[in-house]
Image 1: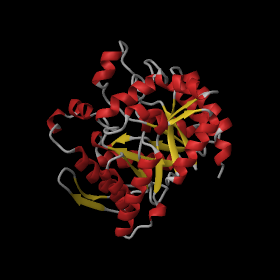
Image 2: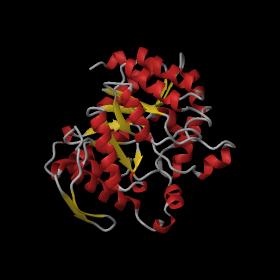
Image 3: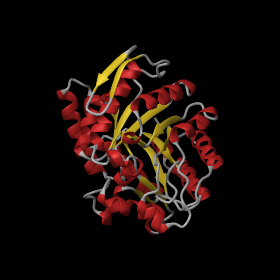
Image 4: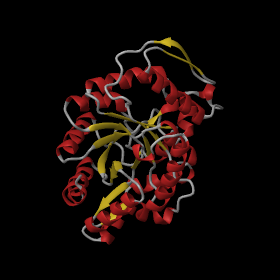
Length: 336
């Protein structure tokens, strides 16, 4: 099992209070995460402040671009994977993104994992692209992923779709990695299908082992139908971590945190249909022994990578305290 830490690029006001981490904090977190033996960092992506964040906080949150952030992190780390968890693909033009990602993979010597999704907040897409408000973001995502793959792997690439078209583009340098890993994020069937048909990973978030096991079964069926080896496709779940010396202490830390309020806010989008009363059960909340047992359940469900773990903490120091304790008490039990 591989483990990663969520990098707070765009989490202030959402999963953490605002203000939260500044640029120095973010790079410091990345460096320590590598030193502690984690596999990846996973920064998320926002352009505009969601409505509910504006109503809750008087200070606007700082949202840092994850790719530029990773340029700084890459220069101060050497083995840590740089994962986007997630990059909101409909907000970005695929040709520009292909150039940025290939460049980052070159400068980091092949450490990029590209997690893509449509984004939890449609209002953000509409605010930034009001003339495109009626478009299906899922269509933009799927066409963009096809353009990215073509530009990464073909010398010259031409594509004509419903929303994007490129003609005889020769883009170099290519990424170091062949293929550059693309993980499709989301809990719905469409996300599983994308991963099974053309991705290197499926990135579900905030759901328990039973739901992931069902998704893994569906992923296997679709991958085999398309002649792909399902074992070559990672299942990289993202969940929240709240450690405590007792279960009650961990539960109280979780349920009084900004992270918990954020998960509840996603009940109408990313976590639609999830039982909000069972959030502690579907995430890693408890003592180290309880968390180890839950990680084992995820592994049995087919999870190969707990990426971008979201550590509860209303300050950077509190968040890092959880990162350190998890590294001390949980990582050794799952050493590869």
